[in-house]
Amino acid sequence: MVSDKVKTKMSQSSWIRAMFEEGEKLRKQYGSDKVFDFSLGNPFSEPPKAIKDTLKNFINSNEPGLHKYMNNAGHPDVREKIAKHIYKNTGIDLTEKHIIMTCGAAGALNVVFKTILNPGDEVIIFSPYFPEYLAYIDNHGGKAIISPCRPDTFEPNIEDLETKITPATKAILLNSPNNPTGAVYSENILNNMAELVHKKEREYSTNILIISDEPYNQLVYSNKPVPSILKIFPNSAVINSFSKSLSLPGERIGYIAVNPSIADAELLINGMVYANRILGFVNAPSLFQKVIAKCLDEKADINIYKERRDYLYHHLIRLGFSCVLPQGAFYLFPKALIDDDVELVRRALKYNLLLVPGRGFGCPGYIRISYSVSMDTIRNSIPAFEALAAEFS
Ligand code: PLP
Image 1 (cartoon, helix red, strand yellow):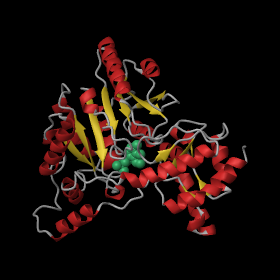
Image 2: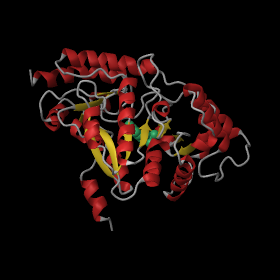
Image 3: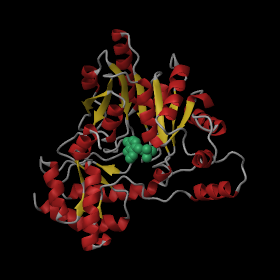
Image 4: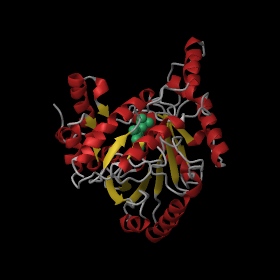
């Protein structure tokens, strides 16, 4: 029954899932407090109290139409609030018509690719990358072109990017703060990229859409504001979700904000609304659209993640790992102590330590550690990291 393509893709199944399943086995065998699972990207915190209170209020309300179909773009009042929120933070004059509510960032990415890609169109992504990008681009007939980041900062390498942009480039996908590296792209790099993209658009007479996937945009450790993609790139669309910032990944709520300065913005938006419908999402979950609209000023407690980042980073460096200090999100991406990241991950299993090999993110020789876990897990895992490091010292 299953198609050849799905069969093949399933057999190359995700490393993150594979490690999680390995963890399930170990938890059954040793008990969950003896297993140090750094494999999954689930937010550690619970949603803020305001979310739960607002949800209760809506459930008890008699708001008419709350559970009905709506415009495929989402509730107009919710979209208006999001547009105003973006205006407040960036000064970009968006209106409700530039916002499309989606089933999380994953739904949004599929909507954008469905809308813009002709067969064989190229989408440039930067490695290491969130592995699902490959599937999302392939879902809609596109071709992923990989541009490796600079290893010293994990920011895009503009010289390499220049060699990857061709007349077939339809989009460039950014992800900052980044999964898996935690890098936050500087304004300087983004400005250089914008200059390059303009030059290439003129050279090839093309339009390149900059898609910025930003589910971690609230999880940043410095006080410096994250540069606004809508300000830097006129041809851009920002994808955001409340999965990580408000710890709501199971509720599937996010949005696309389309830059009003795109020449055919209206056609693009109409295409996205249509794609949202025909991909079968129809519309984003109604109740959670309403809830998040009332909680747009709620903030994730970044100190929870900062405490974990600092503690684990300090110990990894002490043990001889080399690692770029992440500026956002909740992942560390150190070099594996040996060239073979899969072998290191296998050896770590001996100590009930679950890590994900960098090659799952298109970057062999590294490992990803998701520190969105309890401080107890982190503290108790240090002897396991020590034993692992001792094997290679
Ligand atoms: N993009 C990145 C970089 C992610 O890490 C994730 C989830 O881990 C997603 C998109 C999907 O987010 P959502 O749950 O909002 O669909």
